[in-house]
Length: 113
Image 1 (cartoon, rainbow, N blue to C red):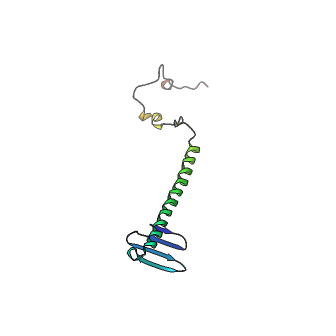
Image 2: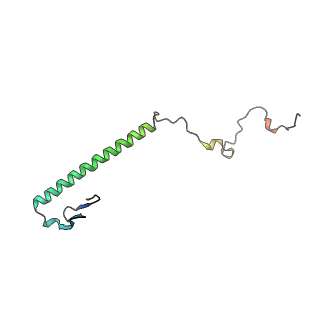
Image 3: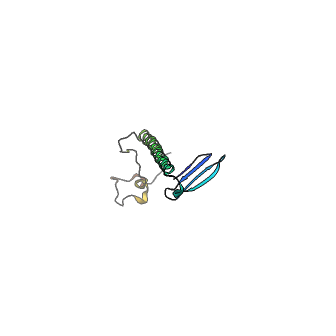
């Protein structure tokens, strides 16, 4: 697990290494096995706290996303304004003629004036 802020960095790899860095205090590396039991316990508590913070931030972001979707999609899931362009392209229409009666377009156009 890696935690970074503007001034600090903490990396806890349970069972292997622990790394702490600060702009003012410098860097500190330790092997997990070299830590005292109470230090290991405190680092494990930090990991659990961070996990809770991550889950809390996930809930915040998820709630906002759900609210945004709800406000955007007020309909009941049926979009009545869907438009299929394929039905309006002459090449993609069905071959069967749908018009009835005479076709005015085929008549000769002559000017009445």
